[in-house]
Amino acid sequence: MIRVISIAVLMCAHFLCAPAWAATFSAKAAVEKTDPFVGEPFVFQIQVSGSEHPEQPDLSLVKDFAVAFQGGQQNSRRSVTIINGRVTEDVQEGYFFSYELTPKREGRLVIPSIIVISNGRSTQTHPVVINARKPAETEDFKLRMSLSKEHCYVGEPVILTVTWFIGKDVRDYRFTLPLLNDDTFRFADPEVDTQSGNKVYRIPLGDGEAVGIQGRGREGGKQYATITFQKVLIPVSSGHVTIEPATVACSALTGYERQRSLFDDDFFGSDFFGTGRRGIYKTVVVPSNALDLRISDLPLEERPANFAGHVGDYQIETRATPTEVNVGDPITLTLSLSGPAFLEYVELPPLNEQLRLAGDFKVPKERATAEILGKSKVFTQTIRALRPDVKEIPSIELPYFDTITGTYRVARSEPIPLTVNKTRIITALDAEGVNPVEFPGSEIETWTKGIAFNYEDMGVLVNQRLTPLSWFRLPLWISLFAGPPLCYVLLLSGIALIRNRNADPMKARARKAFGRLERSLKQAQGSPTSAPACDMVQEAFRHYLGDKLRMAKGALTFNDVKEALKAKGLDPGTLDRLKALFERCEAGRYAGIGAGSDSSSIVEQGILLAKDLEKKLK
Image (tube, rainbow, N blue to C red; front, side):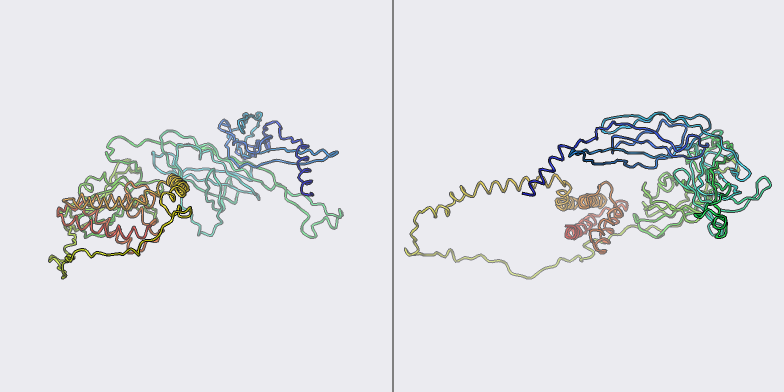
């Protein structure tokens, strides 16, 4: 009874509620300040009413400010009041977006109306006027920029140095470099000596950061504490570029004020306990000087046909391992580029465009990811000798433009001597011997004594009365009673099977993968030469592993599937056999062998390996 009354009371309360969520959908703009300095960040908010899940607004029309999104948050309130038994629920849904805006120029700037959308409804904010003030340096703070050179070529790195001279205590500083938004340059960070003993600062800059070093310096005849950082500018287009002034905004100590004590008398308000003064900080924005940089295009005269845009003084070194191989065996070729100070964006031209190398070796387009080691960038590539008469890995050439002499030059590596032997693959006949093996035994004989007849007397006859209970023993009645439920069960099983197959179509391909692999290997057995057989075996295993591991088949290599097979629990021995099979197939493709027995041994090796893989990948 009490439960029924409670439910009735809740229902009455629900119908008596007067929700106020039909609030008007609106948005307004709010700013932290309306008179910031150029380069001084301030908070800009879009406050939304009537929605808890508005879409993030588009601020692409805000042109005079650098915009940085700081996130969003719900701002809703709910309250329930009961007056004379009437329950009123007040729901005020809200949301706000926060941004950091930084004025790019001085004067009267306008933040335009911003459109806000939620569930098909739209509204917009009112424009906001900002009076951006021109920053000015003081005797206490100065900011200076300098370039390592005033003229450079496209692709030639230039170092920008920024130094902040500090004459007072500061906190909460922020640098703004309009240059970082200029698509004329790519940017890199120079190496910084962090072992010098000087204090190091992480300085946020746009979407990245720079490393600043604390030091001492003089400017205008006055001694200052300094923070210095650098950026590497790599021009991507020519022209005359004006680098706009940078700014630094900080809270600077401008004085002290006396703290009033709780007792408000001279004794406790004095500096007796050392707490009588509090620092007063004021926002200061300091501009830097502007810079000019002239960027020239690389000359067209005498430019090599295979020039790939390398600028600077380059050296190239190569090494290979092993240096004694069979035709088709993999050779790891390592190339080291050095010379320029900044190698982050430096790439090696494709080696298959080196004519001498491509004429004697199989050079794939893919290569391992390069890494920077010390002052060199190291690239690795796998190559395979095509013929036994190859005697060396030829010089690798890299044309480059020398900015010091203003001419094109070519860096060359030293040739690497190489011994290439004819490929000899051990076949199954080599391993088993040439003589056939005979097994002793006897032939199966046919039973020649005819049919043995069985005889039965009348005692085997049983009286079989037809009763309702006996109906259930007859096949016809059994089918009538059990047939419909059985059909229903079979139908449900079929539907479940189809749904399961549609939910995971790759599962069916994985189940059938081994059958397809066996058929492909049998087709490869009929190949008259080893090269087509190697292609067929390798392609069959790529499809099999792609289906089993649910990977794109494409041109799967052993390295592509190695980690996935390890995760499946495949033992190292089987992995080594798979790797050997892939390498043997690769060697067979380029070794130029024509013996039919070699193709059969590759197929036999593949069949044995396929059976082991199927057992372990089920």
